[in-house]
Length: 110
Ligand code: HEC
Image (cartoon, rainbow, N blue to C red; front, side):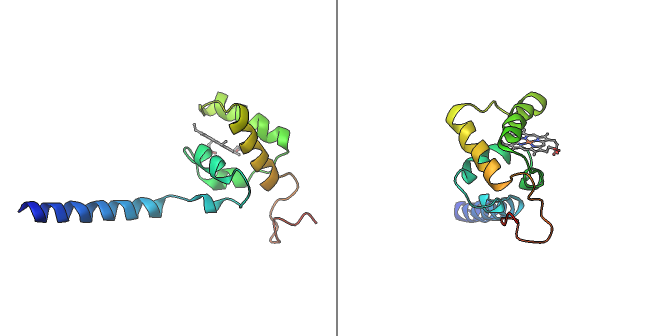
C-alpha cells in the first residue's frame, strides 16, 4: 500500500469509528433542558444511561442523598460544593416527586 492509500484507509476507518461511537452514545438532549443539564449528563452518564436517572422522581433531599449512595455503593467520585449544588438542583427541578409520566405532559404539575 502506498503512503497515501494507507492514509486514506486510516481516515476512512476513523470516520467509521466516530460515526459508530456517535450512534451508540446519548447526548445531553436525552435529558430535559434546564440549567445544569450538561454537568449532570457528563457526571452521571459515565456509568449508566439517562433512563436510569429519569425513571426516578425524588425531592431535593432525596437526590442529595442519592449522590452519597451513588458514591458509597457504586464508586462515583464524590460530588462537592458548587458542582453538587448545580447537579442536585437540576435533578430536583426536572425530576421532582409526584410527576411520574402517565402519558401526559411530564412538566405539567396538574
Ligand atoms: C461510578 C458509576 C456511577 C456514576 C458516576 C453514577 N451512577 Fe447512578 N448508578 C450506578 C450503578 C452501578 C447503579 C445501579 C445499577 C443500575 O441500575 O444500572 C446506579 C443506579 C442509579 C439510579 C437508580 C436507583 C434505583 O432506585 O434503582 C439512579 C436514580 C442513579 N443511579 C442516578 C445517578 C445520578 C443522578 C448520577 C450523577 C450525579 C449517577 N447516578 C452517577 C453507578 C453510577
